[in-house]
Structures are given as structure tokens and as C-alpha cells.
Length: 396
Ligand code: FEO
Image (tube, rainbow, N blue to C red; front, side):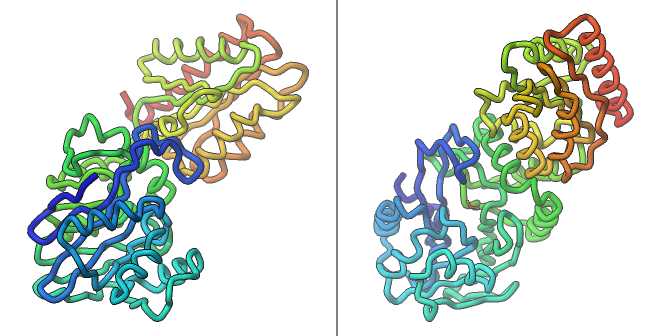
């Protein structure tokens, strides 16, 4: 991707990583991603906001040069994670007069992650401190947990442009940073929110209020599209960080010899017959990012699992661990599946992995071997229970 003009003297100089397929060695990024980096020119100084993954540092330098920038005075680090900070040592070497500007926590993390950063070139700022570029003022707003504890936002006051770090980001490689088709970015943005923001939903909600109070004219996140219409990311995030739920059941499941799969089929149909949206995912081939997206607003999570020896299948345990780590909003959870000679402890085992969630655990359905008429009747009863709970929340 080449540089793109954001406004007079302000350029997008980041890169698109079209074929990135995994982030944090954890969750799939089927649409790739971007590492957003921005140039801001003042009358007396030029700042670069964030860098890119180190493997793309040459592209970043090329984009800066092609924007007509020969000298950088300040590199602003909003976040120490290496997809934004990893090129800082090379950039500092390439621009020997540049200073690195960040907050104290970020400074400590940057030095821990990249000890080759020269500490004497770091300027440490405090919350709401400003940096004068000459006719343009950067205000730094500490915003812990819009991914990591050191994250901050940078606000360009005169132009009313907010650089909110990972907040409002999307894992979506784009050729045009102003791509504004919500049908395209909605799913990548939601899965990004689920993975990065949902575990600290309360903090994200606070930051949404901070952003609303700032009322920026443009929002330039650190991944994915830039928003000229700031009402769009605010509307989406206000919904995601809220307590509102959908009349949906997420069913992450795994079946060793088909018995649990038959239970999934039955439960799925039973829930649909009761007017509930169902999202079943076979964990042997599911995209974990899509599952994460449903964790944002599904009211119930029903984990289906076959047994390995006498325990839950490891993939089901993994799904429970992820659900727990991302702190899904669901109000209800349950477990079902088939076992060979003993599986009675499986529901407790799965429930024990969901300690972060504020869920009511509904009665599980575990069956020995192939599901019987009795098993299907128990799944019908489970569907009735779920429907009643959803109705009690007014979900339709
Ligand atoms: Fe895109 Fe948390 O870094």
C-alpha cells in the first residue's frame, strides 16, 4: 500500500498485510490486517504515530519518503505491542534526530521488549500532556486496556483527529484506508473487538465515552479502515460494550464418532423451532475468530463434547478456556455430549473452566453411547429451558 493523504500535512503511511492468517499465534485473521502508521506535519516538527511489524519496516520507510517526508522529529508510541512498535529501533536508527514519545508504562514495556531502544531518546509524557508541532498540537490521553495496560490515544486538537490505538480496529487488509462499506468491515471489526476489547469491556466502555466527549471529526485506528463518519464505530462499539444480548445460542462442539454430532443436530433444530438463532461450530474445523464474534452477544453458550477417556475432548476444553478468557457476555451456559464408559464429570470439568463468566449453568445432557429417544427428549427440555431464560430477559 502506498501513502494516502488524510488531510493537508497528514498521511497514512502504514502497510497492509494481505496474507496474514493468524494473530497473536491464537486467532485467525482470514481477511489479513493492516498496521496503521500516520505522519503529522506541523510548522516546526513532524511526528510519526506508531510503526509497523518489523518485516514491513522498509515499506513504512518508503511510504514516509513518498509522502515527501525527509525528517521525523517525534515517533509517538501509543502501544508497545510489536505490530505497532516493532520497527521503532530501525526508525530511530534511520532518523537519528528523532525522539520517541510515550507514557511511562509504555516506555517500560518497550524497553523490556526491545532493549536496543536507546533510553536517552525517550520523552515520557503524562495523561493529557501535549506536544506542540507548530500550529498542530498532539494531546496524549492514557487509555489502559484498550488492549494492554500501557495503551494510550493521541488526539490532534486543531484537526480534531483521534488516533485511538487498537480501539475501533479491524483485522482487514484494505487497499483504500477510507474503505467505508460496513458490510465489508463489520465482521472483521467485530471479531477484533471480541478478541482485543471484550476481555476488558468495562474499560472499552469508558473509552467510548472519552471518545464521545472529544467528538473527533475523524478516527484513525491502528488496524483497518479510517473513519470519516465517526458515528459508525461509535454506534457499533456502544452496542458491543453494552449489556444487551441476542436471542442466540452459540454451540461450539466436537464429536469423536458422531454421537455428539447427532445431539448437535437435534439441539440445533429444537432451538430453531423455538425461534432462537443458533450458531453451531465444529471445533475440528471452526475459525475461532467467528466463534469469538458470536461471544459478543449470544445469550447462551452450549458446549457439545465427546469424551477422550473420561474427560471432555481437549478442543471443547480449549473452546471453554477461550470463552472464559474473552469474558463472553452470555448469561447462560450448558454442556451436552456423549461418552463411552464414563463421562459424568465432564459438565463440571467444563463449568470449572468458565469461572470468569457470570452465567447460570443450565442442566447438562450427557448420554452413554448413541443418543436415544430419552436423550433427544432431554435436549428438547434443554431447549425449553433456554427459551424460558431468553424470554425472561425479553429476548425475541
Ligand atoms: Fe494491534 Fe494490540 O496491537
